[in-house]
Length: 449
Image (cartoon, rainbow, N blue to C red; front, side, top):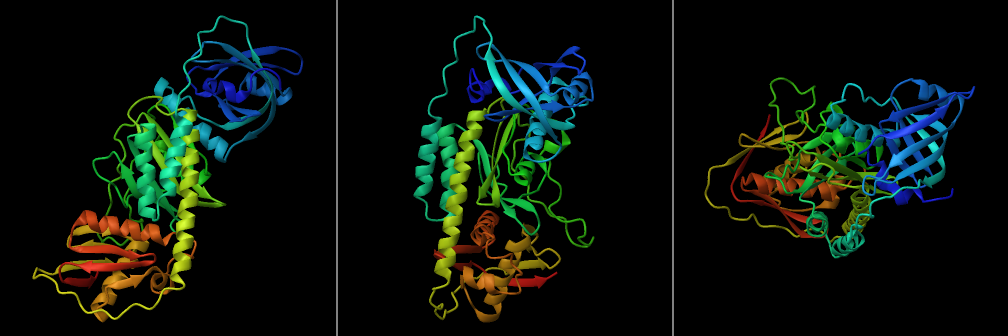
């Protein structure tokens, strides 16, 4: 491939200006048409949006060679791509990334009913040709992104716990990248849902709120394990973050419907979700958003992918260190019951269908975290215990925890933060690696609902 490299003209692929594609039929009749989207796939390939079975589509299937004319939005310089059709993808990371970006373009231009992606036509780029013109000066390069990633990774490397690591990532986004609204969600592999463990820039933390795989920008990024970036507000139902009840449809009618409010912006104009992956395992999603159009470029995407990779590696190292420490922990010492101030007992209700927990009339948590808290409270009531270890939670058959690769530390952090937000007089405190303490500031009355 001669001429500029594809990565040098990535600004042309942001969807701001439609491209022009020229094809030719098998008998030599040319056709020129505007196309909604030319998507940067990698340094050798682009993907064109397949939305209609039109003349362009007919020509490509008969004659795989085409050209695409792109305009750089900063320099107003034209580039011609000489491309060769390879295949059409109708599912997977590339298709979903294009589908999300196209939804934003469609909503921005009022074409929601017209812009419907049927497939991603993948092309090999044989040549990039810079056309003769009088372009505007190159816009100044965005400075400091590589340095921002370095400082974020250095801050993350100093962390010794998951709590510290999440705080380091969110603070780094604000301090070094100017990103005000962000959150980290972890995957619950058993339920195939993501739960919020940390956030910044919102009126409420939303810790414990859930999103299903494939739901919204976050869910699609998780399901396909690919970054999903939208530069304009979208009304497409697939990418809206409206939250449904966190309870499954099979919960009996007599049980209360519960929901932890999702902390997202009410009207985001730019969103970027990046999967947190380590090895072949999806751990969660790093998500950012803004009230401004076109806030996040491909450079921001690159930076967040790097930061999410560091976070994933740090999480796995911390989990492995905790697991190794658990195996050599000495037995817990006998405990004397801690005195409590006189106060009215706190009623704690447990619903076994989904392990949801209520403190008084206030919903706290459900699922694995709810089962853990119920085990701690029962052991305290029956045995007077307040000191516990991660290892015993994993070995307790009553909890039916996922396999050991599940991040138990994230569950405990979620529970710790929800208890702190509720302020009901029940707390969890870490006392060392793989150890924690249940703190009760008042008597509790356990009710199996």
